[in-house]
Length: 302
Image (cartoon, rainbow, N blue to C red):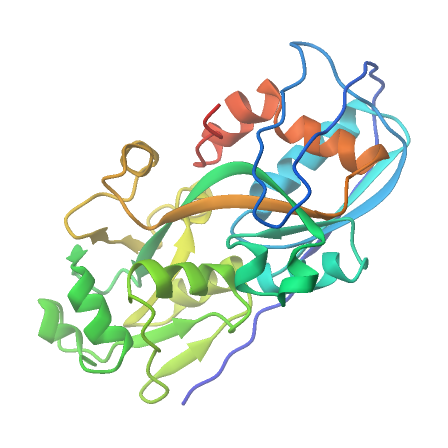
């Protein structure tokens, strides 16, 4: 078994400009609560001071980072530290009070014990999709759900068996704590366990996976739409259809592309101060109608 290792990304965003306004955040107090929050009025911004830290899903990280930069650029005295680490890490850290917001691709009760999950409030901020990608040397353009099951459980180990070149399939996994891995395993593999033999790499984040696939012949993995559609990755990845459906935001929204899930931002109890203000901003038109479509996510249905 081959093993690689990615790195945790921590991005500290600093304040540069002035703005003013008011607003608040609302959510239901349970791990399953998903009551939509009202967006800020056009042009309004609830500027708060202080420092907060977020951690978790690297699939959501491009969106959270971009929104944090926009917020602190408009609000003096605000500092938002955006960490990755994976959904399991984000949920664990927010439940322990180590960070103010934990981002996750999966629900808290799927990763945490019930008492810990019930202390968290779920703020759904976006809908996100993932795409299966390969190194460009792989000529395959579509895989069915059953072919994925056969590949990821080790039954098929060569690309020639699914219409590709005579080349070993190198699977690039995420750690067990990964929300991306959990979502793919649930939706595509039907909960089956992946193979533990053959040619396998493990990387810690969507970004590290993207880099590994581009550099490894025969490699295959799963990354968020935001990474696949990043101009910096254009031409470096071969994106696959799933059951004949293109991995696009319109298909995800219409339900014809199934590898998708809600993007969650969890807080330990009711958020206040800068945490509440930033969550309000995530639901504002600036983010829902601006950043979200520009980064290949879909807005929350309201």
